[in-house]
Length: 164
Length: 328
Image 1 (cartoon, rainbow over the protein chains, first blue to last red):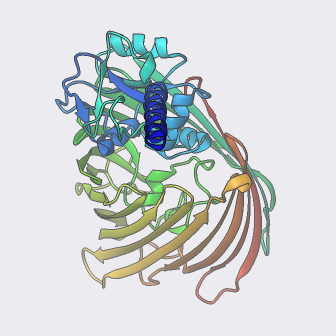
Image 2 (cartoon, each protein chain N blue to C red):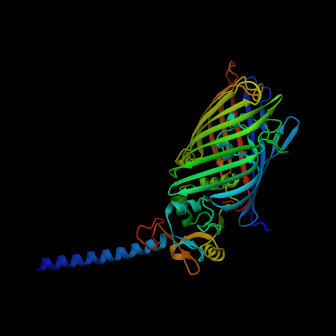
Image 3 (cartoon, rainbow over the protein chains, first blue to last red):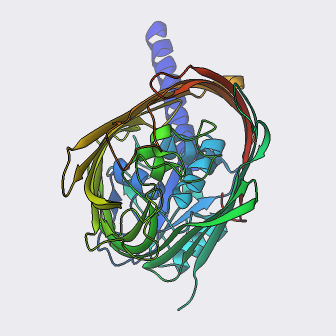
């Protein structure tokens, strides 16, 4: 009987520990995931990751309606979300990223490079103000006025979201 | 019309050269190249590139590129102006930005001022990219003046005959990993006294241009067919270039090698006296000592002419880029 109670208590403790760990994981997930945000008038809700990479690399310069030019906003160096975007989307170092955009402009493939933003607030304000704008910010910083895109069908809060 | 964005660049280089049997060794000021991009509106962009090249009598100014483009869609953009001819990967990948390219100089078949492949093209161009999954196919189709009276130059002041040059180039990137496969065809009529010649240039390239490895291999065949009498002449040229960006604490270093091979038809009146067979083996090391500045050391063993001796040369080049504020 005593042994049964001990097992039950241990199971309960384990269950509580698991619930707390899961909760903590959820908090970490929400704080470290990077959300892709667009102007609210953008007529898409989901991008597959290949398309997202093309947009961020300047290889696709218009939204699918071909009427609205994509304005790419990139956070200035040092920000954690920039590091994650360079690693996961661009797969480039800071040096390679700089050289990539200089080469792209020099080749006349694009007229301008990404617009630099210096805070999540600035990113949110510009995405809200510029039709066709796309940017990124920590999922925890997303406020009203922007649309969060699904990537491969997943939102930043979903398990398996790629940008974290 | 308002300008919605402008970016400017300045590229420059200084080279120290020492070569066997060369009279003009020492320090050379290379090209100083200014480049500007401006987006005039949502769909209209303007691009310009001007170079100043050091010569014995002073500096030669040249308008390298001047392009006005209207973007209908990602799949279709239309432009007019002066371009680098997309009959070679190197010609449109690096233009005159020596800081961008790994090696000290361009390959012989597409060298600045060379005549094997016309470096510049004046006319109109349609271009675009089609995407499907990880695969993308880009194309360029153009019509223009072709070679000028001086065959190393484009017909900037009009065509030398009533036969316009035309070209088509395409590049396939099947895996979105840096691998690309491309080719082009170019047609023109060239005037070389006393005859005119139908010129056909076919070229192909295989490239890996992303991540640590850098592989570029190009082949070009140039045919000149006389309009009146005589036989067709065929000349071939190719190069294979390989580089590798080192990892970890050696990230700033990039060793590279290149092999070049040009066989010129000695019966070709368009190339006669001006081009010879060429062989070269090149080995070098690039060191990016700053984000926008690099120093390259390069050894060349090259031969100009079928029966000439191989000559050794050593080059050290400092190349840099200056970008306007806001470029990353």
